[in-house]
Length: 359
Image (cartoon, rainbow, N blue to C red):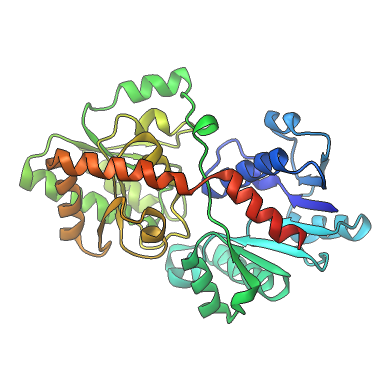
């Protein structure tokens, strides 16, 4: 079978969750599948790691200025058909083979439209509707995303396969660059870490407000460190950060474990998440997790996290303080996280994805 993969998502110099998923999935498909032939479609020159893929993986560079997936990739699969087409994030080409599979990571725009720009909102709504309507199969990254798709797009549950993200200790826990090591070494000795993109649905302002109050009330020694790129409508968040010297924003970090390993707690206060990959990062680093009790986060973290209502400043404060003040709780959560991490692997993700691609 010839399988085409839209691989530009995996070709980013600054990967976030979706891009990391795409890269790890391709690498692990290469490890487990020597039978099928793959065509990886890219818009730009491939990153170095593509060169290490086996001979049944071919790269095709298709330059195009705008609407690359819908137009250029459509033309490509029309002229050079594949048996199965895999789109790793929502946007299905207008022209596509019958067996087309699309991964949908979340539908945050349907729940928090005010946190997206108008053009982006309209594009995401259309591309997701189109994928749900015309793809042969949808991969959802959590049961919560599957439920959301059924509710919002009236999809047949049988059309949706749930395939969790994974984690690989051998390849993902790399040391940071010398610059990142210096930055990590300059951080306060005690800190709470937020690790995600700065955007409204991540509830960063709610976290900052809760943390500042907690610091005043309980006189905790910790600082709050925010690590992540700037997402939609980030300006208000940056202004909020600038008002509080106890809150440090270090920007996007390539090797997140350089910063996680010294944190006393990871806080994930989002209003909505399709999966929440930073939770697995914390589990791997032996760092306890405090996170929202909404969307997919309890599904991913299970009993290995302490939960709070993201709309309750009091609950956020209490969850953070409970972990920082109780070492036995801290250690129990870290131990449970390490155990729960065993449920998630990129090999398992690749195996389950391959089953969907080749049905």
